[in-house]
Amino acid sequence: MEMKRRVVATGTFDIIHPGHVTFLREAKKLGDELIVIVARDKNVRHKPKPVVPEEQRRRVVEAIKYVDKAILGDEEDMFKPIMELKPNVIVLGHDQHFDEEWLREELKKRNLNCEVVRIKVKEDCPLCSSHKIIERILEKYGGR
Image (cartoon, rainbow, N blue to C red; front, side):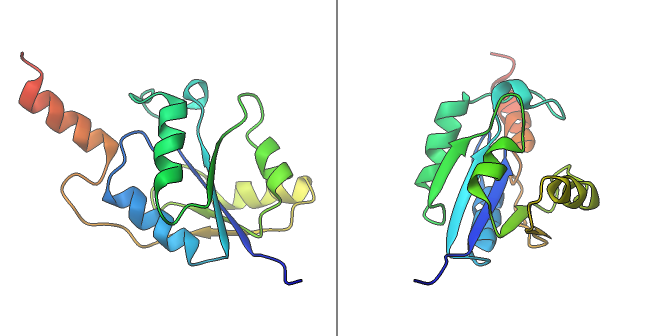
């Protein structure tokens, strides 16, 4: 039996937009199975807390056709689901805050031999970020 090539993507996926879909489509091209780890609300520290609750974000991500499965991350150890999933590839988005070398070193410390690939393709649209969508909503409806 042939082994499936497992790809793992991670992210907050707060307000889904074309940039998320492009990222997940490109990630899926790198393997047979795409599993997405959706960030827990309490673990989002590098930007404002998500608007959409974590389980709802997970369900929406899992509904995207390129995604085989979406799970919530671990609240204490971000590497725990990766240790369990044992992916062949971990993909990072073009603007994700992870340092690739740091991530490779942390994976090596845990005896996880997987590629780390940064997806360079990005969607070019006026509202291709959750932050921009929130700003637009505030512009249009903030004063009401």
